[in-house]
Image (cartoon, rainbow, N blue to C red; front, side, top):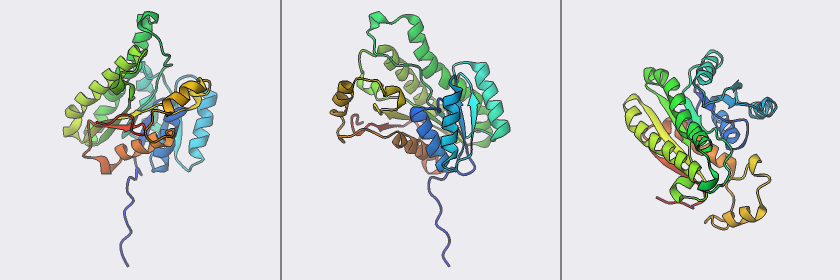
Length: 257
């Protein structure tokens, strides 16, 4: 009798934290990680009703998941959240850094510094704080996965969007440096750069804008949220253990490098 074929991309025995996972790409990523076998820490900041609905949806797939409230731009709240995750699910092996503020298109004259600072808080400060809290345990275990959800906008220089693009550039640069720093500890740092994949918050976006964007996608269709989620599963898996400092663009071919 032949031996059973090993299951590829299994996350059994792992604990994954996905920030901003009560909606949109974050929720889809949490679902995919759970379907791959990870225990999922679902993070949200404000809307508890929406978060409870997301948790129910994730659990309906058979995944083990719990809900954790924290503003991931605040160090004390991150520390409290990690302690709760460790008590309820176990040590955190995978951190998907996904939480985002509103992303309005504005010319530079319309920005004030508080708006720019909010972008930096989510895309530079938050990754730093989350990594600093997760890394002692990851280093001790000689294993960890940091996955930053960035964006195609950095590579394309989208305008009028300079505050968001600049902050995403900071997140990208931070990831590239951290991959070198953490590689000796068996910890990988990678990025997923989605294109415009419509989710709940895009419901009221002008249809003309949507059609104009879709016309630029070489594959000729919209991306699906779970396509971002499965990219995260790959990067979180043992099979991607020699992949670090890389960006997977999930945008139907709009960017190539």
